[in-house]
Every structure is written in C-alpha cells, then in structure tokens.
Amino acid sequence: MGSKGKDRKKKSTQSARQAAQRRAVQQRTAERRVRDLRSRLLPAGDASAAAGRVMDAFADRDRVSCAYDAEAIVSSMASRMAQAGFAGDRLRDACLDICDALAASGAPLAVGILRAFAVAGPDSAVRDHARTLADAAGRTGPAWAAELGQAIPGKCWVTTDPFRESAVLLCEFSYPARGNRHAVIARIDPLWHDAVSSLAAPFLEEAGSLNAGSAMGLARRLGADLREVPPAEAAGLLRAGLDALAQHGPAPWAERDSEDYRTTLGLAVLADQRARELAAAAEGAGQATQAPSGTTAGRWPPGERERLVAEFYRSPEGRALTGVVARFLPRDLVAFCADYLGRDPLRPGPLLFRRLLRDVLPMRLVLPARLAGDAAPVIRAWAAWTAGRASLPRRLRRRLLSELDGELREFPALLAAASRKPHNRYFQDLPDDVISDDTRCQQALQRRHLAVPLHHDRAEDTGTPDAAEPPGRATITGLWLAGRGIPRDEQASYQAVVEELWAGEPPQVTGQALRMAADGMSRDAILDKLAQDR
Image (cartoon, rainbow, N blue to C red; front, side, top):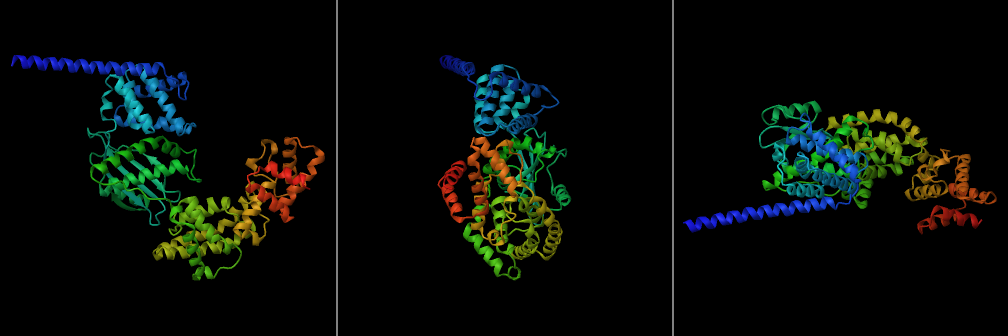
C-alpha cells in the first residue's frame, strides 16, 4: 500500500509539473507573438488606444455587470467599426489587432474581454484568436465571464401581417443562473430580400417565459398573425435575414440617420451570436436549421417569367389594356419584384405597390414622364390579376386595390419630379416604339451614355449641365476635351460625333460605336476613332 501511495503521489507531482510546463510554453508563445507582432491593420498606438477604450467600457459596472452586457458591448463595438468603414477582412484584422493589444496589456479585465470576443467576435477567426489568447493568459476572468456564450433559447414567435409584407421574429433567451432574461426582436422585410430591417434586445422583467397571452398582445398591436416556431425555424429566419442585410445592405427607403438604424447595426453581431445559439439548440434536439433555399430571382428563371407575363396578357385584365406602356411594364414589374426587391411577384400587397410606385419605378424604370398616365391602368390591372392569382380573400383584394388607387393618384407627380433627375433625362425624348422595345431601348441608352457619360462618371468640375439639351451636351463635351488637352481646332469633330451618337444618326456611326464598346474599347478611344474617321 505504501509503495502504491508513493507511486500515486509521484504521478500527481509529474502531472502538475507537466501542466505548469504547458502553461509556461503557452505564455512564452503568446508573449513572443505579441512581441513580434506586426500590426495587421491598425497602427500599434491605435490598437492600444482602442483596447484602452474597450477596457474603460468594461470597467464601468453600470455598463457591464453580466455576460449579456459584455456580449452586447463587443457586438456594438464591432458594428460601430463597420459603420466607420471597416468591413469584411478589414473589420476582422482590426479586431485581431485589438485582441493582441488586450493580451499585451496584462490588465486584469483583459482576459474577460478576450473571453467576450471569443463568444461575440464578428467572425470565427476573431473568436478563435481571442479564445487562444485568453487561454494562454493563464488568468481567471471576471465572475460574469463564466456565463459568456451560455445563453439558453426559450420560446420563439413569428408575427406576420395578412399580406405577408412584414414579419417580426421574437426569441427569448436566458443564462444558466436564470438571470438577465432578454429577447432578440428582429423585424424582417419581405419586400427587401427578407433582410433584417430592425433589431432590438430588450430585457424581460417577467419571471417566467413569454406566454401565448403576452405574445398575442404584441401581435394585436402589430395588426398581425402569430405563431410559435421551433428554434430550427427561428435560427434559419434570423440567419437568412442577417445574411441578406450584409449582402444587399439596408433597403433604399431605410432612414440611415435614424436611431433605430444605428441600434440595428449595433446589435447585428449579437443577433448573429443568438442565431448560432438557436441553431445549436435545434441541433441538440435533433432538428436541422430550416433556412430558406435559393433566391427569389433564382426561383423565377427567364422562361417562368415569360410564361407568367403571357398568362397575364391572356387574362381579362390583360386583354383590356392598350397603349405602349402595356407592352413592357408587366415584364418590368416581374423583374423589379424578383431581382431588385427579392419579392415573389405573385405575393401582392399594398406595401409592395407603395414601394414600387414611390421608391422603385420613379428611379429605375425607363418611363418618360409623358407616359405616366398610361402606366396607372397597367399597374392596377396587374395588381388585380396577381391578387386573384394569389387567391387573396375578397376583403384583402378590396383593401389592396383601394390603397393602390390612392398611390396611383400621386404617381404622375412623382414620375414628373424624377424625370428631372440627371440620369432620367437620357430617355425622356425617346419615341414610343423605342421605349417599348427592350433591345432598342438599351441600345439607345448605351449610345447616349457613350455620347455623354452619366453625371457620376464625369470629371468633378463639369457641374450639372442638362445632357438632354444641346447646350448642355456641348458644355460637358467641351470640358472633357479641355481636360484631355484636345486642340481647339479638333474639338468640332468630337462635338459632331457626340450629337450623332445622341441622335442615333447616321446608324453606321452608332453601330460602329456599339461594336467597339462590345470589344472592350474605352469611351475615349471610341470617340477618338470616330472623330478621326470624319
């Protein structure tokens, strides 16, 4: 027995010595890494200053008293950096620099902050690096660090309006100590690629979980339907919404200067972390995350779009239409829904048409202001037909068409105002037969853009002359020629080429210019060649 006791004591001593040696090696490795560090993105002083500001925030017990606070601070910091211009690899590298500066500081809070980065960092590279540095530090973090990354999903609810044009996802979370109960509330915008448009993360004062009664009350206030969803579906909705926001950015109608938008950006990283926790809970329950498959545009290939438009033209609503706008607008409406908005064209609603009429068509549709009155009957016929095609209940159809009529009364004024925008001036005088033919219209715009570049493609000192008027074209072209140093006695040839391209006459000049553009020649080279050939 004595011999066995000595053996156990010897093995225990060896194990302790080996553990100490491993910690010493890890510490030396970390110190050497910090000593030899070449800053990835931030200068060393900037990284240290940023680390200092982070430690000041974490030292304020009114701001950081629990794991939730720590995760939210890291999320907000990463999001503010993204707003300041750090995105993708630049955001990752800046966060890695800050983590290295934290590790080098030796401050008591540094380990806890690194643990927070290991949970709520903006990407896996930052999280893994922060975890490595925290492990190598060999120090104990603050008490709240023990619950970092331990949020437990509770119930999840989705509310949607009757037209499925807005959705709100509400997910409850808590920590193992059953404190700091909170929710992540994500507003999903089905009219903008199903992207997250708003985020909030309120604390829940109630001792129990969200119940059907309180959730129903929220749904009623939103005028929406309600259903409870499993973590797998909630994870898929939240993850897809955050990915869509990152890919497409905020919707064109979003108020980027609003407090709500800034809050949403500040919570994006925390919401991403909560999506991972929902997915982990689903996986633990044997459920696969239910993420939407593919894109709306992918679900509407060219052949399906043509079949849909042909079906509309055969319908009573389509057969009643006449005029030039009816020849092309239904096809454009399908494209704007599927490609630009990421919305299924067969899911009509009043908000969809409001966005189309206020935010999309005036700025993106090639439609001269003179034809605004012809557009209204086409849009109303399309709305009525898609409402029937989607089997909307009669009361919803009446509501849709009633609200649409109000929007259509304002549309001519909106289109007239948009027609004065510089980029819309290029097509105001195109004849009806060109406007209604996609190929000819695109060729006409291409040759006019060759003749006079769009405002944002010109030299900065050209001002805003009207490209649609001969004096404006002459001014823009003269400034461009002067900037290139073209002699005055040669400029008349260039001015003549510009007018020929704008007018499309003679067609030989236009054809030659478009062929050279298709071959990859620059505008300068094309106009040089055309001017020399005169």
